[in-house]
Image (spheres, helix red, strand yellow):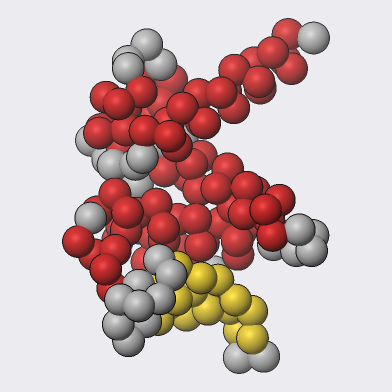
Length: 134
């Protein structure tokens, strides 16, 4: 059961006032978020349509830039915030916790995300739980 289907990402983008545009061909990066005087835009590479995992992860990550709304001037830091937000969106606690003892690849397959995203999300849960214990 995929906890957050692609259709919901489109709905969320619309609710956030983000215009989503497909690049004209596959010679562009997977995705890009930018703010313009006309509002926020997400540009997506049409090649991501060939993999629902890539599509879901790329789109969620770009939405994460809008949702976190932080422009620190440090692209790596901004990217990590967007990734963290996207991982939590695509694998919310209510969905992930019952699967906590599964292998990361099994969770990734079930959620339709990269295994690396699952591993990062699990590390994040561990860090959060350690903070609550202190």
